[in-house]
Length: 363
Image (cartoon, rainbow, N blue to C red):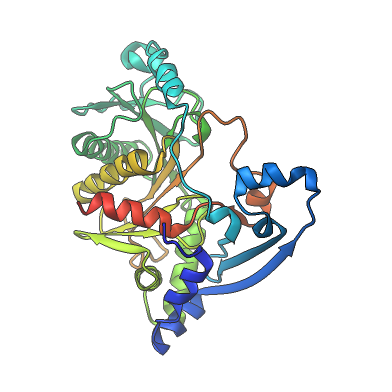
């Protein structure tokens, strides 16, 4: 992490923007600074010093609030919290033991332990599909990984998961030609909402319109393009790149968001749901695990509709988001009422995340 605090470094980078770049920033983002004070009893001093290192930093806290005026995503960074070191899970051995002890789940024998879709199963080199037994939409399936360990990432495996998912979307569309909006999601382990440890991803193909949050993003990005004659995602990438929070790997663009939904959120933009994206996702997941201790995460990829639609999609890349869901050994949930109904509160500096990813991916 940069020795300077996140807020100080952020404003230093923002000051380097040209007038044109700052105009683009200002039409997407709004930034506020605020402060908070408290008076701790002397009996708390030793605990504060051992936990935070500085009593004065606790007494007077500094906040940076960033809101995306196009999508209305927002984050609050507490200078005190973002300067805490990022470490891996010290009890990770217990997690590994729990993963290994759950090998005999229904997913370990998917042909007999899971239902199949009405169009059958799609078999890949490292995975096979199943129908979700408790569906959240009419066409809702699974990519069940051959490997039980959900933290076993490799390029060939993720490429296979993507290939199998693409074939599933095409077959599902034949069953219901009105269902044309695909969504690929991957909830890894219990903090991310996965009820089964065995590695798997979720597939959904819906009709009528894309899922509401996807449709909101498409709509807001289109309105932005119509108003400013500029692609929203291109401008968002330019801003993050200028801030020192974005990089390209081949044709895939990666950002550490300044308005994350929760800690260590990445935004990945690609031309297609293809091998290049699969390889990048695999490398990112490996790097997140090995350098930042991320072992439970949510991933979602928004794909283009399977056929032409009444609404415009030409401005939309394949949008993938990955977010850390916190330590598996912690009993405390990482998302509360503030995140659900107010604005996200972030503990990790985006510069910490980007620095570690950049070092790992460019070796």
